[in-house]
Amino acid sequence: MHCEVAGRMLYAGASNPELEVHLSACDECRLLAVDLAGLGRAFDRARAEWAPSPAFRVRLPAAPWRRLAIAASLLFLPLAGLAATSLPSPRPEADLAVFLEHRQAPALPSDREILATLFLEEARR
Ligand SMILES: [Zn+2]
Image (cartoon, rainbow, N blue to C red; front, side):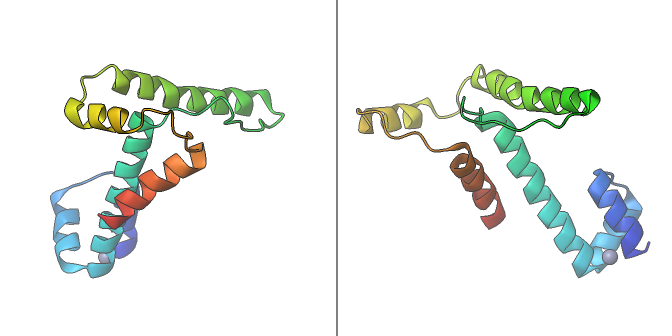
């Protein structure tokens, strides 16, 4: 398998035994696989942990179908976040500790800060 084919499969999220053999022998594609996996985890966390603030705005382009497509994709994030918050927290005692330590409401981080933190955390793994 050539690197170009392997790269296309990695970007598409596909996998098969031939790709696994290539990854075991090719450092470049293995690094790409690790990078893409980290990026995927970061997007998963962003969907689960980040709900856009009311200040989060995107200027929509003029074409109506593009406007609908972007609106639909922006709706997905808060809905996914809402679904995630309805799940039981894996560490309720840790969340409670954070709440008790910050009796006065701390300044809320911006959307950019929240997303940057998520992606930096995943990049360090
Ligand atoms: Zn390769």
